[in-house]
Image (cartoon, rainbow, N blue to C red; front, side, top):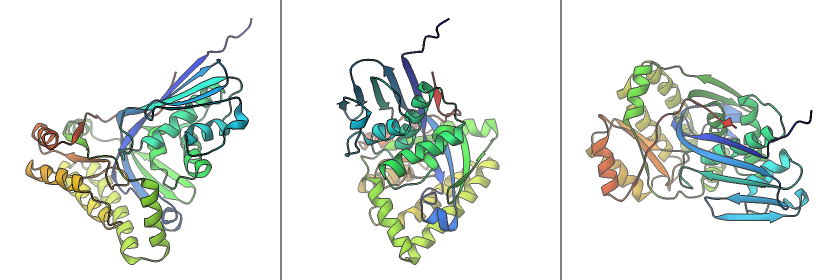
Length: 336
């Protein structure tokens, strides 16, 4: 009996909120001194859809409203256009004509780890078409290689691991080794945290790769301010682990604030005028704490409200900032 292969494959991978320790997963700091990040996935997703057949190879980014068509895999040269799609397809080739299309729920430059989620969704959908099973951590490693090695975008590994694993995780980084520990938190506390999280988009961020390159070059040059800030970020991740395990929401807010203060020491452009405005609104609403998502220098900020968060959301919206509905999500990448 002939086996009929599917002609369509789909994958989605979640974005994340980095509660503490972001930046310490980035080489060379992670390689030399070891990094630690605590993050949690949210119900904003990156999607990758693969359709077999058609004429040639069609790559599509629905978010960027961009597409390219090639006669075959030999034309998939990295040229700054849809390079994640090309690199993923070169790493995990699928024979024949096809369309590989992506989209994201979060806006570009959000700082919510969507490029890492996109890497993960691309690798997952191609692996499914190739009938190659990967466990979540192997998938995360492949996804990281697509962006950091093949495309050459400088950054850490936390986004791919969050997207692959899902849930709240404590991630330790040492050279090429990553240890993931899922934090199984008190359900009532997790529900309260979920309801009090407020995420807002302050405006498109600067290119995070440029900021990362600038910061890590200064770290390699021995800049004591940068090194001290990175150590402070790693310590904040340890404190965040303890606060979450203790179900101490006030302390979670305090550690978010402490993490943000260390993060702002990394680069003069870390805090934009829009972010200052968002922080002022959060203080007026008596939020427990907050920070920039991801690399900073624009993108999203998130806060822990001291109540249901309605006043904070209203204040942010009235100031022209975009409140993004987002809830914690337990699941990682999935295919169908």
